[in-house]
Amino acid sequence: MNHRQLAFDLNHRPALGEEDFLVAPCNAEAVGWIDRFPKWPSHALIISGPPGSGKTHLSRVFMAKAKAVELPATSLLDDAIPVLPDAAAVVIEDADMLAGHAVAEEALFHLYNQAKSSGSSLLFTAGSPASRWEIKLADLSSRLRSLPSVEISEPDDTLITTILVKLFADRQIAIDDTVLQYVVPRIERTFSAIQKFVAAADKKALEDKRKITVPLARAVLQPDQRLPFPD
Picture 1 (spheres, rainbow, N blue to C red):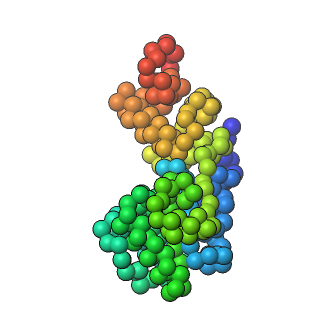
Picture 2: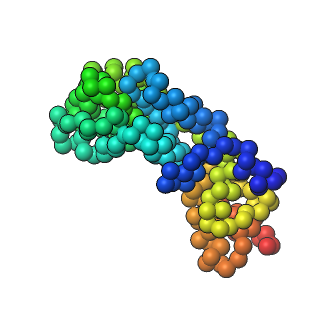
Picture 3: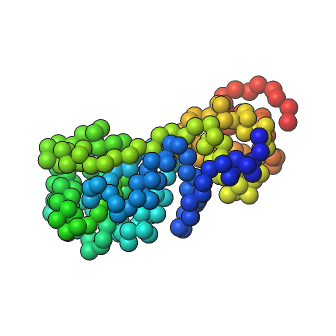
């Protein structure tokens, strides 16, 4: 397994102020939608996915491309008739947090209609597609469910390996192939788990004053097991 080759198997997107975005099958459709802007079939799009999957980075790419501004979702919790920002496009992250809040749902409904009438574009990010949001306002629910929606799925082995290599490289750590071969089939297959593992392994290596090895990786992945395994 060649680390450098893995890094080039997946395309890199411009950092735009944040870490590089790795394009893989699990997120390629979402990337494609951002790349196609402004040629969307609707004035709005929903990108959903688990924590750490790159939704925020894609929203930043969109903001740069569309000259968009971000409207915090929390700002809609107290004002049922908000004013749409004066911009060509607006990003609302974690939009699903507004579901079930009467005032916020009214606010989101008004923003949706304002954007449509003014020709502005909207990008929503969320943890799940709108079809799973517990929206009480029927008109809002029907409009959001009719929007184009793309979901980022959990990573496959290739992407897990590449993310591990990259996150360790960000910490100036060259990770050994044997460690990757041990970790990849055993780690929880989520973006957040990968990030937590890298942080925990780095912390333990610093505390123990040793390199990241298979025994150290096993101790991080299975902290309750104390099986002997010499470094």
